Amino acid sequence: MLSAAQVAETYFLESRHMLLEIAAHFDRYDAAVARESGGIANGRAASGQGGNGSMARLREAIAILAATHADRERTETLLELFAKD
Amino acid sequence: MQIIQPHYHAIARTAQDYERMAMSGVVAVAEPAFWAGFDRLYPETFIDYFRQISEFEPTRAAQYGIRHFSWVAVNPKEAENPTLTREVLKHFPEFFAKPTVLGVGETGLHKSTKNECDSLEAHVDIAMKHGQLVLIHTPHLADKAHGTKRVLEVLAGMNVDRERIWIDHVEEQTIRPCLDAGYWVGFTLYPITKCSPKRAVDMLEKYGTNRILVNSSADWGPSDPFTLQECILEYRRRGHSLQEAIEVFHNNPCRFLGQNPKFDIQPIRVETLSREPVSA
Image (cartoon, rainbow over all chains, first blue to last red; front, side, top):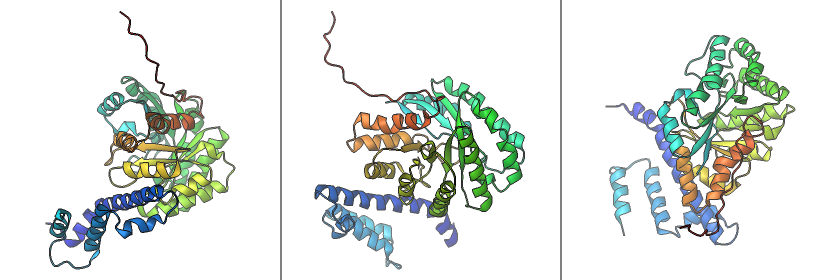
């Protein structure tokens, strides 16, 4: 099995890539909200307000990931989060 | 739809790439000189490499109906050997005379050292003196923002035709200053390490399509030439028309590369024919 340092290094670029894709998803959503509101709205705030259920769910997931410690495996927690109605 | 791959390292790829690209609409590729994975020691190694991409590779591509063009350069990673760089540069004019060589590239920066900056300046200088196009590589990952800024600083100190210079591998944090300064820019679509097809489309929607090229990734490392087609699919899926896609993925390469008359593929426009009577 890999050491902790190896795990951190081996998957860094892949996780960086996925985080950038998520950031782009949020930016894309904000830009769409701004377009639909008919002007240059404060797009950065849009996804943060959780006006869309899917985006709010993603923000909730990101908050779980950002926590330093987790009582249980994060993957399991997120799967349950995404299974909610 | 007809597609042009503006940045494609053919010698690192198999003929299967050419076959699949041809089947997916690719009509031309342009191959910049690249790093071999190790630092070359002899000028003659570069000369043979330039012969390979300017003489042999067009014949391989032609078997699949694809036009092949190329560029010559000493890679930024090899710029720490200034003597070698100077020796190789002396041979550039003989390759500028080849029928499919479009200019100097990919030059640029890797770690943004003084030797790299000197090499970049020498490459741009010889290109401008010979009326050639220039393709500039910008660094990857953590070095990108600083390296791109240094590229712009080096160019700002030179007398260059900005419309003939393409700054490649731009991302969200580097695109604006390059466009604002009047250069062409390129997105490079890698599976993980650079831009992605979706992010490229985001930038096309944000900045428009003027002076923007989109490249796939195609070299000897983890890369995928069909990220370009993936990007086209994403662009069309978001509701952009076929003509708009052609403007980005075919006509813009024609506009930039066509500044060198050797690149004679012309921009195209789709036209719907009025209903014609069916003949008996």
